[in-house]
Image 1 (cartoon, one colour):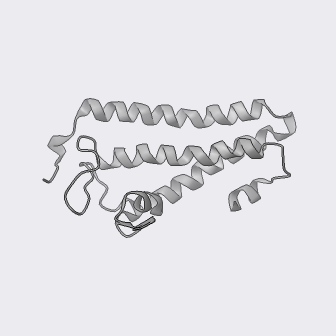
Image 2: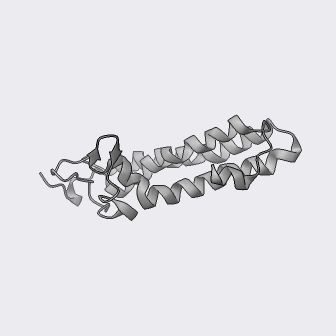
Image 3: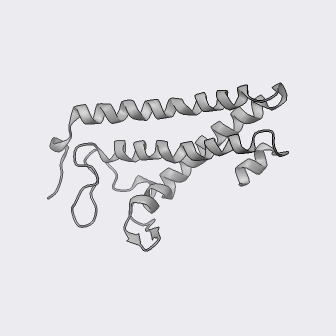
Length: 144
């Protein structure tokens, strides 16, 4: 059964958007928390690592990450051909090729954004493991 814009529940969509905002606020909170645990000389580096990871992962999520996670499955990997650059991710509920929907009452873009917020947090959490333990420059963090 095909979903349309009429199937979207405004309350559910609003709650998912609020949840996205709360998860987004976790990143600066995490950056400042980790920075507060470090000596003054490492504070800017820690905050930069958190924000750079957010930028890089967001771009990767947009380009191919969402498609790898929610495209057709080929064993361990998904297909990057289904949703690259959010192709076919619109303001209607997101559908699989067989016509079933991932979540039937929120827009596909909201679903992709919500999942993307959780893709952004793990690399930022990893910065705490490296905090002041290695001579880690921001450039080497980006390469990692």
